[in-house]
Amino acid sequence: MNKISVEEFRELELFKNLKTETLLKLSTIGIKVAARKGQHIFRDKEEVNTVYIVLKGKISLYKLSENSNKKVIFILGRDKIINEVILDDLPSSINCEVFEEGELLTINRLDFLELMKEDFELTISVVNSLSIKVRRLYRQLKNTTPLKIEKKVAAKLWKLAKDYGVTTEDGILIDLNITITYLADLFGSQRETISRALGQLEDLKLIKFINKKIVIIDKDKLSYFFKGL
Image 1 (cartoon, helix red, strand yellow):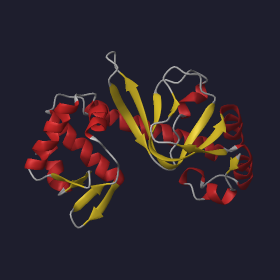
Image 2 (cartoon, rainbow, N blue to C red; image 1 turned 180 degrees about the vertical axis):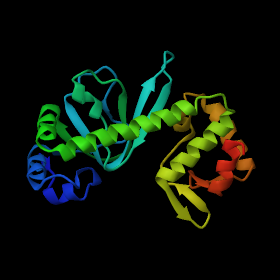
Image 3 (cartoon, one colour; image 1 turned 60 degrees about the vertical axis):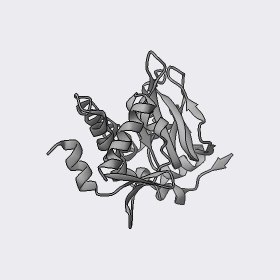
């Protein structure tokens, strides 16, 4: 079994305020596992008895429509709890797929609950994690109001640039291996529809593609475009 050291736990923002005693216990019960791109960690309605935390790479949480079309709800990176909702002992309510290869920390659900009772700072970390997800869902609901698809795509790219952007001489590079198909999954739309929307944004010189990655040429202009100001 691949254990994680107390020092490695201290490097994670999620655990920075925990007692040393708690970190020692976590290092005993926590196990590192490899996460392969495309691998499903768990599926909707499955019984899940493990808490998963991202150590490296990125994870996608998605739902399937009645027509089996993917709708991506979250992309989570390092230092994020994937499934804190299982602490209520109900089946999973979402699918979890590895978006970018990496590593996960796995902890038994009951062991994790015991540590939450012993160290209130861990409980605060879990509540904060849930709060962030709720706020993100609120923003997503706000963005479900009628908007042209190119504006929805522009808004999503702006958010991805904010979360995963790297400043380059060409603009802000979204440092994710995002395909048109995956963007379509983010919106629950057809691939052709998203391709046309990206083409429009490219024609407007708001974005460009470099080595199959998306670059935001001017973040402020992109924001101006989708807000319609």
